[in-house]
Image (cartoon, rainbow, N blue to C red; front, top):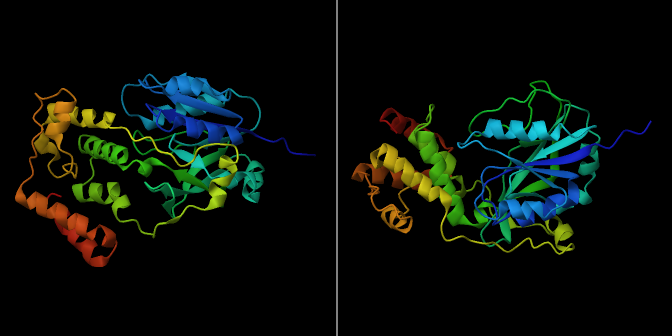
Amino acid sequence: MTAVRPTVICLTPVKNEAWILERFLQCASTWADHIIIADQGSTDASRSIAASFPKARIISNDCSDLNESQRYRMLIDEARRIPGPRLLIALDADEVLTANWETSPEWQTALRAPAGTVIAFRLVNVAGDVETGWGLNWDFYWGYMDDGARYSGDEFHSSRIPMPPLAPRMLLREIRVLHYAMADLGRYDSRQRWYQCYEVVSDKPRRNVALYRTYHHHEAPDVPRLPLRREWLDGYERRAIDMTSVFREGRHRWDRLVLEFFAEHGTRRFRRVNIWRANWIEVARAEGCETIDARDPRSPIDRLVFRYLSATQSRRNTRLVRWTDQLLHGLGW
């Protein structure tokens, strides 16, 4: 008896992703049967772009705060309205399956996975030249052959799919995910600054050294930058999908959110967070927020520690640097 091919459903949260959304939807439309977009109050052209793609289904995420668990639960619940066996693949708008999904035997193997299987991809960060990148040797579990298992995530840095503890796991190695976030470093850095501030005021803030090591990994990648493989792009480019241009915005919404943190908590709360490469006084002026005190509150010692963190980021996993980081933890960092 021939197994029924699962319906392939792409799950994607969106908020103001017009800069990349058309490319994402063009690519996802080649492999997904349905693309469910949970739009969280976009004020750019995201909704109209999504509405122009026949496979896209837009649902509204009315949550005003960052709650990753809530948005993925919403996406999974909507996908489960589609009858029959389902393969769920959860990607952000700046992530694209490599074009070799079409020719790699891995894709057919994934389609035949038993219900309850979680599927891992490896990420390739696309550099600003959109010709090179660096791969991450980490497994990101973003695929799930749905069996209706309960989804449980976290508010921040959540899993995207159900992760039953004893679920079978499939690790894909040929098919990768191209991550375009760092193709626009200005946008990426703006978002990373906001993430760090958000963690500082959260219920479970991490130490400042840990924040630096986590949010500045791109400044000292663990692997050399290499040319993007043609098999990752060719299948899309043959369909006249533009895989190389990057729209770089002049201003980014996260900068204003950081200014709002300053207004609520004061800048001193964030003096040991590495967000001060930005000229916040100029940002406040551009955003019409001149009344917010955005002056750099760092002491000379704070600046010295930041120089140490930057200089040792490429050696952050060595014994000496880990020991020094622990010493800084003990001093309040």
